Length: 121
Image 1: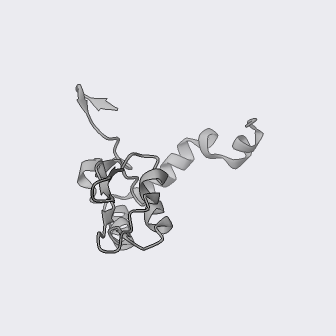
Image 2 (image 1 turned 135 degrees about the vertical axis):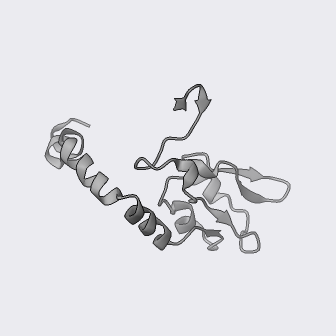
Image 3 (image 1 turned 180 degrees about the vertical axis):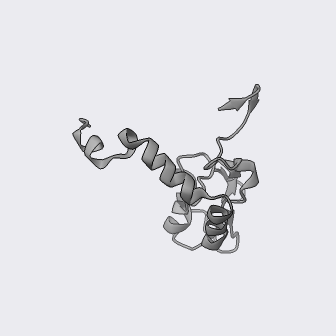
């Protein structure tokens, strides 16, 4: 994913990822250093500070917009995200609903359940 030779992160529904404030925040006083967030995130958002025994958000823009898996699996509720209202406002302001419906309409072969069920796993 590069643009003009520079590393860039793919946009989310045509919104530059750099313009979207969506990433986890580790609440240090609640974190017990279990590392579930680090080892469960498949997008490389976290690293682990072994000296402090705490996860560190090192690649916030790699976090998938709307994903809260790390917060959901954190046994101590030590990970916070912006509100769901923020995402809903982003969707409304940028007409993401319309774009999503257009994507479904124009890419039926990619999303159609009947097509996907007929393709061998």
